[in-house]
Image (cartoon, rainbow, N blue to C red; front, side, top):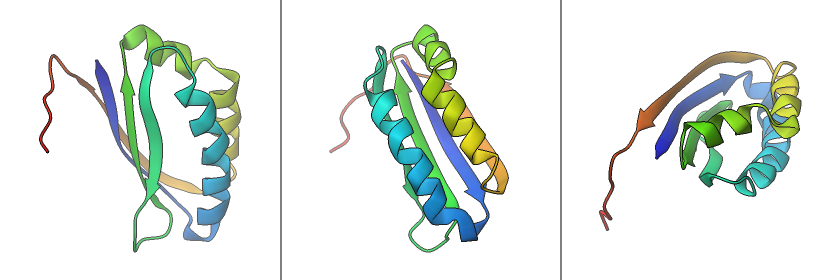
Length: 100
């Protein structure tokens, strides 16, 4: 399993527009084969900062996602939102267990 996690920061004035762009991407991605979970979560007190968390069955599923039309549309939308930083990291996970 692969986990992608990190942050995206953008112009705080575009926070709500970013949420609008993220919603259809999340919905379409959750329906993809090989996707386990996918989402963006806004920071509770810092507008324009979003936490990213994705889980994929394997590298092939992640690469297929990157080539989807909904991902291309999202990337185009992000270009208009004043992105000031991205920090996304992929983790290869051999096993996991429930914490709580």
